[in-house]
Length: 197
Image (cartoon, rainbow, N blue to C red; front, side, top):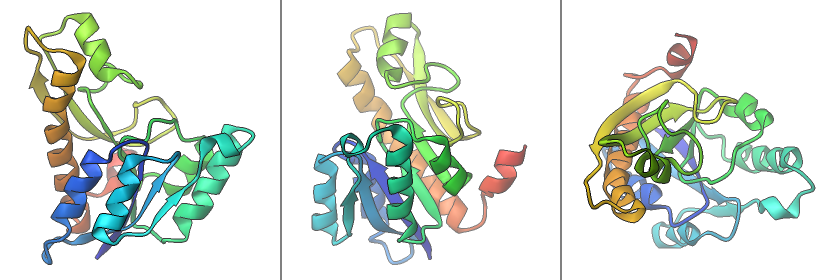
């Protein structure tokens, strides 16, 4: 059984999908802890699903490196097989990448390498493209430039707003994430091998 730690900043919609999937006894992975960099609404899912939660508030540390060191300490307590950044709206410092990669993955609401960064949906709309997408990547020290695990196109509709487009991308992100967790747990996907290629 794969042990997952999921890190969030917001409502945790991808996290909820993962928690619901893992309620199936046949699902080969379990979320063992939920962490956040602030008081995030998604932490309430811990209470709902009986999962321990922790917060490492970014503002409580003098700099990003100090925050990263505290985050590593918290995550390591759970001895995870996989760490998932699911809407964690903060770049993790290199020490975090070094500690957990390639078993550190991230969902992104664009078809990478198109539209990296914190505003992938807004940037796609501003560029006037006809399609964008969702991606799942191994986290490295670039901005959304790590090895791509899976991705899928999502059309941009003429009347789309940032909100409506994001709402259509999220279910694709969730599907890619759950499939990847399954593939990793069942040894159909080797993140070390992917990161070397």
